[in-house]
Amino acid sequence: MCGIVGYLGKNGAEKVILEGLKRLEYRGYDSSGIAMHSGSELKIAKFKGRLANLSDYLTENPGNSPVAIGHTRWATHGEPSDANSHPHFNTTKTIAVVHNGIIENYHSLKNELSEKGYTFSSETDTETIPHLIDSFYEGDLLSAVVKTVPLLRGSFAIAVVCADKKEIVAARKESPMVIGVGDNNDFFVASDVLAVLSYTKKFYYPENNDIIRITENGVEFFDASGSPVTRELKTVELSADAATKCGYDHFMLKEIYEQPDSCANTVSRYCSGDEIQLDFGSIKNMAAYDTIYIVACGTAYHAGLVGKLALEKYVKIPTTVDIASEFRYYAPFVNEKSLVILISQSGETADTLATLRNAKAAGATVLSITNVAGSTIARESDDVINTAAGPEIAVASTKAFTSQITALFLLAIYLGKQLGNISDEEYSFLMSELHLIPEKIREVLADMSSVKAAAKRIKKCNQLFYIGRGLDRVIAMEGALKLKEISYIYTEAFPAGEMKHGPIALIEPGTPAIALVTQESAAEKTISNIKELKARGAYVIAIANTSLEELRKTVDFVIEVPDAEGILAAIPAIIPCQSLAYYTSIYKGNDVDKPRNLAKSVTVE
Ligand code: M6R
Image (cartoon, rainbow, N blue to C red; front, side):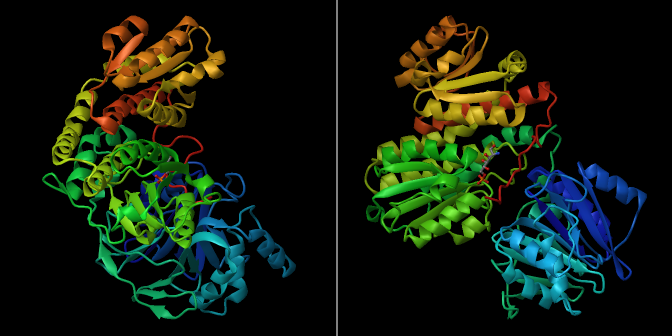
């Protein structure tokens, strides 16, 4: 999604903005731009395409501005083009705005502004904002923004500069935004701390509907009516390295290899020895809940499907798993007896956030599992489990997924033990199995030769099927999502037993299929389904830890993974799926970390 970086200080705003936008590239974008304070005017440069275009411009037109705002745009209203790129400005180019999010009522605002004589030079919703601010501007940017914000419907984070003052005014509603404070009286606005982590670790996290004024005298916060409010300055513990590749070719590869640590760190964050310490403030009595609803999007949804299996086994409360963009509009039975578990790496996904608010309005208790402490979902939830995966930069989620499963496993056995569903002996066994996971991941990562061979085999195919039963089916779903996201091969996951009810019609001689076989109880049946595919000419790769002898006779080749207890088996098994997607994408020459059409943090509906 779009990225915002703003700077006020003496370090040369152009350099800070460009560096910050580079660090936000991972969010996905199709154009970029900057508005710089230059004497008593604003200079604006914006370009469709890669950030290199803006970088080239700034190299040819060097500057040392005291104030600037920059933006990477991920198109929503209007195609990627120079004109639709941000910043947008008023007719006289004295007010410039960068914006993340969507202005839902832009159409009616545009009509009203057009009737007043304002002309528009883009197809964006954003362009209404500088014109509205212009219509209220009488020399005080803050009060013009205070009058503008209530007229905007939707979600947004905006940063605004004007030609006659060295200041930035920012506002946020629903969309994330941080305000950084440097050591040399310099200040930053960003949609993500990673953008400016190399300059400061001190941040304010504005509340929803806050309006912020940054001048060389400091940062001031105002509520929606323009009255001053106080916000707390916090220090983040992330290192600036967290947002670099550390010698890996791609963020995705780095993040795949970080999984032994991200899982271990998630365990150690919530365990003292074998004792799980999830000291919830709101979830006190599980007997108060008759249903658990897990709600999430994409990869986090798949983690939820895995988590359901452990929650139903150990907590013994019926658990459903839904996609947030559906659930937010259809959840008729959520009430005060519901525990809603939201899973979100970013903690900012718009549909998941909407689910949170609906669930709370219906009286449910909300527990979130997020990877970004201080994210909107984390802040608004009743209780939170923060996975310790560290920043995930690659669009294709990897280490967040395995950390989410780790967190769900901890949650399930913690609650199961509290409820008396797990004996002390079983609990110790489950904890010892959990502690083995990092080593099992390392074992898979140590030899990628068969994954690379499989990637070479599938790189030219047009379609591919993943199959599995039970837990294996969920691993298959996540494997299929990874492959389609970055290799662009049409990939679908099916329950192995479902193929013969329709999808098997798509199998032709040579069609590749990947079968997950990690559950001994289902292996025999899955092997029968594999034989049905083989009989129709499919080329079958198995990712397996059981029935290996039989599989070697049946399939074209086997990628062996270590066995693990219960849902933990999903962790070593997903590693070859993630790596297969990575290498297939590399062999096809794709941009792994920035796959086409995708954004990292989906903050629009
Ligand atoms: O930040 P979230 O976990 O809420 O994001 C959810 C999905 O957008 C995300 O998992 C997406 O599907 C990834 N690109 C998957 O690799």
